[in-house]
Length: 428
Image 1 (tube, rainbow, N blue to C red):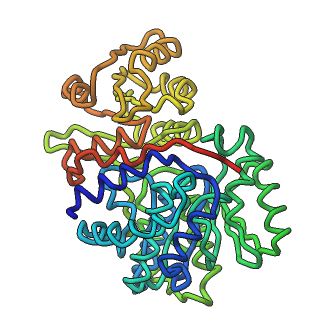
Image 2: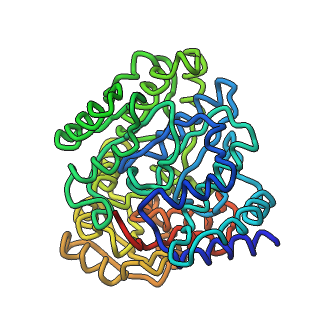
């Protein structure tokens, strides 16, 4: 088997959709030797900010000298981004080996209860991290938490970034319901740290923590400022990153008896954190600036708007916007339309893409004076705005990943973004 064939095998698992239960993952992990029993985890859930918080935690513990595994999704360009050790992508030959070793185990499942791609990848990651003797794994949920495949682990701490409306068709149509799913990662007696501040959501988290006798620590933006005085930390732009930094710091504090980290290493970790595609500013040799941000839900778009108003806005930028049809793109368009000088709408490289013409019409309704053009792809949009000084590319992480590829900031990974595609088969 070669790498392309391993990726094709994972593509083949997409027919099994997404399965919201833990039985298959537990069984597959057991067949693989229960690698999770050999590892220590920080389990991270939430609506937005999961990736940034994971990146901060990873950077701090790596600065402290630990061998740190990082499991995140979706990937921007290469599937290998999902499984990293000390921020090195898993090698292609290891993907090939893990697929070859796990594939025979799948024969022990009935055809009507076959593991999904995410379940298989979750166990692949556990197996790799255990084999590589990671000291700690920063472990991000895929969707939700309670019935997410990642929830078979017993972490040192559970972390919940925030709660907002997203994936309502799977997680519920209210903050309370979504909070209950995210808080499903809370384990009996295991500390839980959260930056959630929506009263309805926080009430649910508090109640579940109380029921499970899990110590609850609340983190708020600004909690970290005195600790980080005199540093450039964190270099991830945006006011919202102060909350994520406070959350990461509170988590490190909670675990200090288990994993000691000095103040110097905390600062070093914050100063060197890197997380592409989230308010990422790129400047071309010609001086043109691009801001890339995967604002794929209303809360994310509101964060982008705040960042533009407070940190970036020097005149109105041009927007290149593409979104998935199953996201709340009408409200995202309405939020961003007043900020734009002009908008180019494009399709996202996904079978679930929203139509550029529909996106353009929505921007036009929100701001009738706006110059708007629906284009056939990102490449055409980049040509159309080649003389614009400041361009914002946003609406979907798929689009951000494509932009990073176009700019040469990520290795070309032909067709691997399609592995982010999924549809649910059942929910319990």
